[in-house]
Image 1 (cartoon, rainbow, N blue to C red):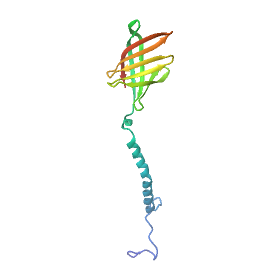
Image 2: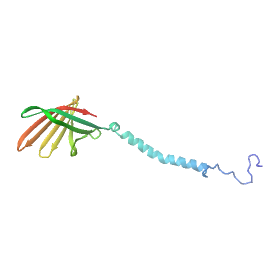
Image 3: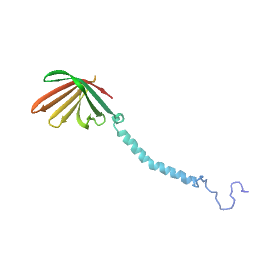
Image 4: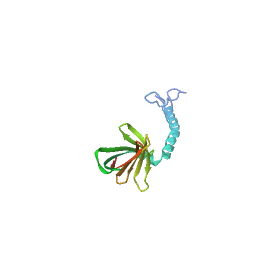
Length: 165
């Protein structure tokens, strides 16, 4: 029998509480405190990075404009389009960059915003061809081609509309 307040044998101390995996609880608690201290700088760094991120980055998205044109004009007058004529543009709202997506793959194009709303895509193609597609806030669109064929100007404009998704 162990006397109250005493131990089995004089000079022996009782053993510290032990976890089921055999580790001393006091050592485990100290280890947990050290881990927390080590993680504080990491947590602070993450919070600083999040605070410095622009608010717009959280709303980053890629928009796709699909445009269909049903009529066009050239030096001979206004005509109905015989075969379906469609253009597709993608717009990265974070980087404010755009691409024209065609059968040969994506091609970088310049992006211009209209102060009153709407936007314009400008594409310079080999051979001095300039293609300009403007889209207003309502989705109405004009696609202009300024091309030189056989040394002569061959302008045309297509009229239609674009959907955004």
